[in-house]
Image: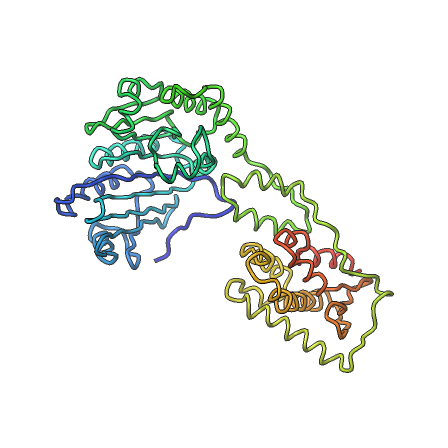
Length: 446
């Protein structure tokens, strides 16, 4: 069954709900999960799960939900996944652990786009959903917030490094999100009276001793000045050891880092840089766009004027050209599964190859001797074949691969030299991209 998937790079921000709660192990699982199902079906307005998945996907119903849990049932755990087939996109997981592990349900839901929650009514439903979950399943901490801002907040902050975070979990209020549920232990560490007097849009004590807190009415405008001030006021109230001006400055810096930047990439490498940006974490994307806007790829040096071309020095030029074709096929064999366009030998396939090598960090991951012996000849031959097929180029064979040339217009290009430069480092994949050399050769062919 086809479902909507969270979009990558140019995607909008998303709302992320995280919830880890305990449940009563002596109660039948159907009864233990009834509050979860009731609340989800009642309050996930507009983003209600439409598909549930265990080992296979089915249209969501109570019956298919239990089937999914049974399919994934192990001795100590089970779980299921939830999706939608219509906008907005949903990816949601439910994990359950059993004795001898602590009986626990772990919920993570991501709804895209975040702009779906620009309406106060939709945000209120999210609040009621987490309130219902937290009222039935004791939590240490639960939250709902922007995915992009969560990523920006993951850096060490306010005296807490990553190792401490991994060791201690949410043992102290290091971050205040748009929606928070603080468990009894956190409430007592702050002081219940202080917690309940937090200057926030909504503060409510739950029957099990937890406290629900919402900083402002809507989550979609979390980066606005008013929302950041509310977030900072709440955080400093809960952590009197922090300085309001410092906290607010940090939040403003995060807002600035997430502000959209219009791409203005160098045209020769714009297709490649756009693909690279697509793979960057959303909280780092705008910084990367700004970095690439300033990036100017070095002019290719792997060419000489046509009248300075080296003449063929092989006994059988046709056999040499067939050899170059065989080498190019090695790249096709290497990459065709992940880059199907490699069969086409087009300018677009060069960009796909560039991106795949970048994504794999190929020059860093693989042994240098194997790169030089196998990858460089295959890449150089493939680049040369694209110049021949798409720009009307002509191979000028040479005994040494690095001297082999492709005549295009008034220049001869050295594709094997380019491939050697290209594979020197991950940065060289951008500085010496196959995409750029093709575009420059295309401009100069007349």
